[in-house]
Amino acid sequence: MKKIAILGSSGSIGTQTLDIVYNIKNDVCVKGLAVDSNIEVLKLQIKKFKPSAVSVNNFAESNNLKKWCVSNNIRISVYSGPSGLERLVKMPDVEMVIVAIVGAAGLKATVAAIKSKKNVAIANKEILVMAGSYIMSLAVENGISVLPVDSEHSAIFQCCIGEKKPQIKKIVLTASGGPFYRYDKKFSQITVKEALNHPIWKMGKKITIDSSTLMNKGLEAIEASVLFGVPIEKVEVIIHPQSILHSMVEYIDGSVIAQLSNPDMRLPIQYALTYPERLPSNVKPLNLNEIGKLEFFKPDFNKFPCLKLSYYAAKKGFTMLSVMNAANEVAVEAFLNEEIKFTDIPKIVEKTMYAHTISKSLSLDSFIEADFWARYYARKLIN
Ligand code: MG
Image (cartoon, rainbow, N blue to C red; front, side, top):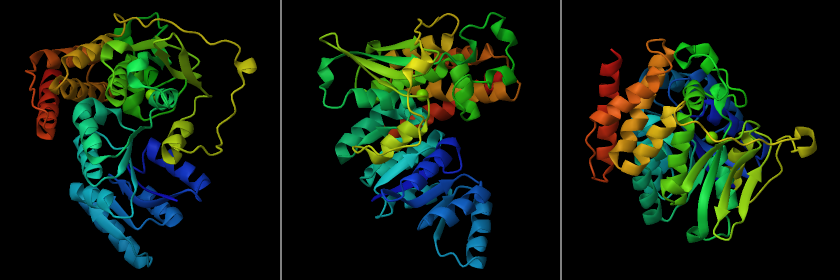
């Protein structure tokens, strides 16, 4: 029985993870859950999964939850704030932490989990983009595994099992292309509603917008380079609208190994939970006869400048990565609030990157500082 904690249990990945845990409850059990402020969802999760501790970031809601526990005679520890997350991941009976919360809070919790020698499954690529080199070296130091939850990275991970890293020639990351890879109207007129209408995946708002600008794929290229220890030049992006082939790895002898399945996040989440084992799942079996054709196109870097910015940031490395990621988060939020146009997103990111002076210190604080600076700078540009 694998004992896990889920950070961000009320979000899209968090709730899907719990659905899977429920289906494989003889193999995985939940010891800790953390949310930002959504205690109504958390209450249902507590009743169903009986964790030994939970953490609520918002102090007022955390107090409300404590009262609810007392009046319902539920005896669990309720923590709050950033220190609550740390206490949760450090609990001795937690073996693996699923990180599905964003920003600096997610980063600090991941670091705390790794330092207390817990395996981590990272669902938020932002953490690996922001401070990937730091996280990966910390993981080696502590002898723990960092498992991918992203569908493409789970695919690459599966294509690399039993292989040797120096024999990888390149990683080919597939992208559905989002709603606009064939869009023929002016990109500056794209509305929030159009951008939120993803053809394949149903996801949170931030990642859906990132998919429409292809920033998501840029972040994933960086994530792949970090997780699998290959230079960014060896990571290639290809548009594959059917989203059946989730990524592939080409080896030096010319062999290409790919992982295919119907697009369903439950598969990569379950694999991260059960690795190195596989268990039956509810994912619809793949029927290639029915699908008929799989198409592949080269992405247009000029139409989607966020891709170009990602490769540039990856080549520069260090704090440039935190800066790009933070500026993008601020720009996407501003677009969602209809403060800026769709085409302003890459402009804000680029201007912020241009204004940044890279720090080559590899401390956690330098990444967090760069993140804060970029948020402030990008915000100023928007205003
Ligand atoms: Mg993905």
